[in-house]
Image 1 (cartoon, chains in turn green, brown):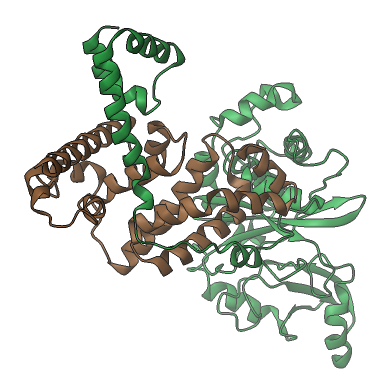
Image 2 (tube, each protein chain N blue to C red):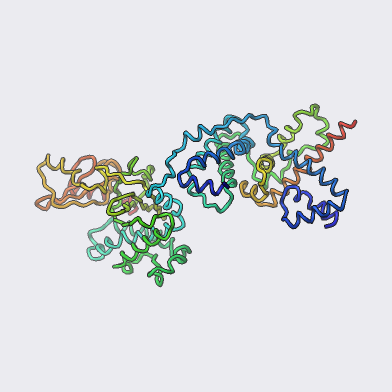
Length: 347
Length: 184
């Protein structure tokens, strides 16, 4: 190091931006050169006063630690299993779950699509759903590096689990896809290995009650078109509920929260309790019930689009619908709503 | 405990570690925010908001950059949002600010300043936002390197470095003039 180099590097040296080796060279030069040592001292003084400049402002700092601490949720990061899963989902929502969700769409739609293939007339809205999600799945195609890397040990490795949505290809592979998603969850350290996860598919447009609220995850849900709820089971008990929603070309996988056995929950043990009261008043008896897609975007019949709609088969073969507004209506009405809302549903 | 350990601790449910984080960074964050919004009460409110956000979003922090950088980035975003919403200041992009450079005060002008007290303050005030932010960040945290500052301000290292050294020279000549004036 000569004087010129020293002078050029001096600022870096003082600002502590050099490597240890370079620092040593600078120190060594200073011990041999009085002039440079003088420069160093002068510049160091300038630097030091620059460093304290931030405290020159006439501002008085009062700490607000107490306010901060009272404004945060202290149990946000507690060690409950649902909490862990929650943050796992959130943290990985982009990396893993855009792909995983795409996979799961296949899970959910597999049976319906097979149905559709055999009885094409029965399922009008399904076509629309498929059209919308096809774009999504093409977008989240097999290039997702995480999947390629992690799938090595998995039996599906020869064929990438995410296929462009072609109805024939996933016939009968729903279980495999499920397994893959489960494996994906398990392979992360965040989901405890003792937790047995089981996915149950539900109809889009159904609500769920989690501990503190109802459909907690998506309060601004108006434009969301497809919505799936997936309870997570541990020893046959629901511990949490996650959701998948699709709108436009986006898929969002989220954790709604800790399960609550609210009597109106879609996963409630006794869903028939919901309509029993109303039906008894009318003297009707239900033979079968099932949750159906809720086309009521105007919310005339249900409280919201995300609320459950039950299709009830009454003794005698008649089909009626029951909503959480405690109203019953018939198939004509149901079809009418569906028709009116077709545009909004993307059809 | 280093920052990363503290973060892990918080994510495991230990709120005391968050307390430590506040203790460690609150005043720096406050001063950094003040350098942008220039109002004590607002800075205080924003500082609180920053820490609440940091806590709520902590699970998204993956440790790919320094925790302090992440923290200051949040502080910067909050402040810029505030400034934007309230139209209090016109913000210049770092490159624009560099090119305009009209806020320079000639060394001669410093001589004309009557009081010695307040000159340093005026020196700071003469700087544009980016310069001030760089200066504050460099001054606040021992160990904050130029690449950290660049990370926080979302620009490249060489820009930060050039700007800082330019300030250094400017300040140096300011001090020299001061000395000369005292000699007279």
